[in-house]
Amino acid sequence: MTAAKTPAIEIAPSDPTTTKAMGCIAAYLRELEERFPEGFDASRGPSAEPDELVPPKGALLLAERDGEAVACGALKVLAPGIGEIKRMWVSPSARGLGIAQRLLTALEAHALQMGLHTIRLDTHRSLVEARALYARNGYSEIAAYNANPYAHHWFEKRLA
Image (cartoon, helix red, strand yellow):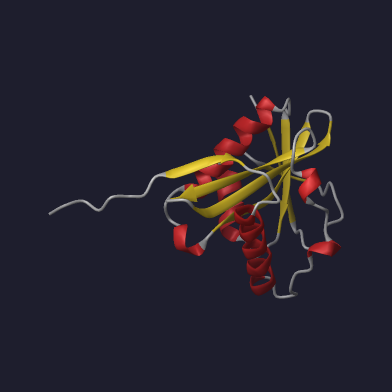
């Protein structure tokens, strides 16, 4: 019996205005619209515009499998030394491959390279998989740090 070959996953910074990056972010926004009982309108929450996701204000990482973008995650600088994870998403076709874990690890490493020592994020109560990922990785639930109408949980992690 021959083992199935798992396609290589490459995670790297990306310009948020590329077709692949915009496709990932659009898929993420569509999924939130479908999953949130109240729907989702990105204009009502904290911004994550393309110009905020490039150095020195932030960064966008894409995970690609065989040249196809299958996941994204962004960093946005909130204040000196403090960043926020935004737009973290893995395509349903690539879930279960450990990409979310690898992407989160890459975002943390990138944050350190950017001089960030603390990472925050917020999430909706329906995103139980995301909350479990963050808890497994040392993120602690904190008081709300923003007025995101879609957030029910806020997390923070101090990076080494």
